Every structure is written in structure tokens, then in C-alpha cells.
Image 1 (cartoon, rainbow, N blue to C red):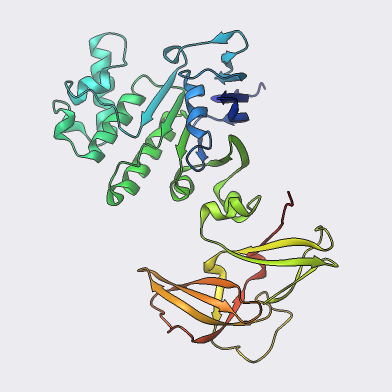
Image 2 (tube, rainbow, N blue to C red; image 1 turned 60 degrees about the vertical axis):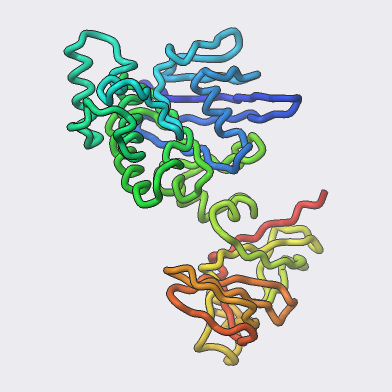
Length: 362
């Protein structure tokens, strides 16, 4: 049985401006009904990659394939209207002089009856069945976003490209609209590429995350894997605040405030960084002073003094100066916990929640 071609595939796409690469040898494949998120900071090349897929930007090298047909490559560059794609952007780009129904129908071809039926079907699915005769200025931001989604889906695109489509929405509306959008996109069977700089959005919506930095995909995988097995310190830091414990690997061991860490595979005498997220740094109220338990995943407790504590609603952040080396670590504690500066407390870390990275020398 022949293998089904992915909805979208890009191979070795490269684009340079001013002599420097903005997108460098980017490849990915997106199946029908799959959401792939291009995640990264501003200027990392994710929006340029999206424009190359759309056909509004020409790549210097590489190919774009949709449903097994080549859209762009050496000697070929099909315009956006011939690629079978839908696009959604942050500003929604609705036509202010057209009704909701006319906006949704704008990209449709065929007879009036078929277009009217498709518009009605989509407005029903985005919960705007009674809004056909309204104009964009009469709608809330969330309603405008749903109209933009319906318009993008109306021609039944094979690939949906979304560039920060939810960033202009109120936080209270955003989660519900994301979920509605995701459900409809999967039902339609489009391959979706979502561009965002927000890790929470990527984790919530994506089947696969492609983390970009400096024009390249530095890590790619399911959200769980990208979060829990970051490829380097910068990848870990992009998803959350981190603590960094620095040391020197000697004989495959690195001494830290929390005892010796196994650091095999690192250069003897080389610097390493042990990374742990604040939620995995625990305050030990029961074991302080009782000494280490070498069989525990929590390892050796270490003493530090509180520098400051801040209440953030569902959690408190407590910052410590460690006795061992004067380094600073931050713990995330559920609920209200606001010890006074100077309070001495014992801390533990889960070793199975730590990431160890070698420090690259220039």
C-alpha cells in the first residue's frame, strides 16, 4: 500500500537578507489534521518560514511540497492562490465594508447556492449562525477571530498557516477560542502550521513543536518530549524560568550544594551546568539536619537563606542564597508562603528532573 504524502513538506528551505541567513536549511513535514508549531523568539525566522510556505516570499534554496505536489523549488514558484492554503493573521484582516457572510464567502468559487450553504455551515460551526448580516465593527475581538477562521477554512485548504492569530485577544477569551479553533481545524483535516512566541500556546495546541533559534530548528518533537528533554539550556529556559547550578566535572562527578552529581560523557575538568526548574526545587521542612539519604531521588539537602519572597496568586516564588557557594536559586511553592528575608531553610532537588549540559568554550 502506497504511503500517503504529508499535507505539507518543506525540504532544506533557506532565505538570507543582507548577507545573513534568516532561515537556514529548515525541513519539516505536517500530516493531515496535524498541528505543528514553529516556536521561538522574535527574529528567529519562524514568520519568514511561514511566508515561504505561503508563497509570498521566495526561498533562496529548498523546496515546498503540498499533498505530494511541488509548489516551489529550483525553477518553480507557484503563487499563493495556486497552493491550496488558508492563512490567518494577528489582525484578522476582515473587510470592514462587507458583512460577515460576505467576508466568509470572499474566497469561494462556484454557484451562489453552494457558496451560501458553505457559509452557513461554517458560521454554524464557529457559533456565529445569527451574525451573517453584521459587519466586523459590530463584533467583539473573539467574534472577529472566528469569522477570520471561517473565511480561511471556506475554500477547504489543504494547509492552514497561522501567524500569532490569538495574540490580539483578551486573555479570558483566548483559551476557549484556541480550543474551538483546534477542534474545527482537526475536523477539516488541514495540515496546520502555527507560528507563536508563547510556549504555553504551543504546548496547548501543537501535536509537534519545532523550536527555532537563529533561523534553524534546534529541536523538534511532541510537546511533552520537547519540554521534558530539552536539547540545551536555552531550550529549557524558553519554556520556563530555570535555576542553573555550575560546576566542574571531575572523574564523571560534579560537586554541587546538593552533593555530587553523575556527569558521565563530559570532559574531565570541563565546566557543566545543571539545570532545574523552580517547581522542582523543594523546601524540606522535615529532613533538615538529619543528613543525606543517598538512596533518595531528592539527594542531599542544602541550606540557604531567603533573599526575597513574592506571592503570584496560585504560587509563591522564594529566592535563596545558598551557603555552599553563594549562588542564587529560586523555588516555586504552591499557595502562600512568604518567609522573611534572612530565614534559613533547607532545600532539595529531584535529580531525575535535572538536565546536565556541558558549557561550550569559544
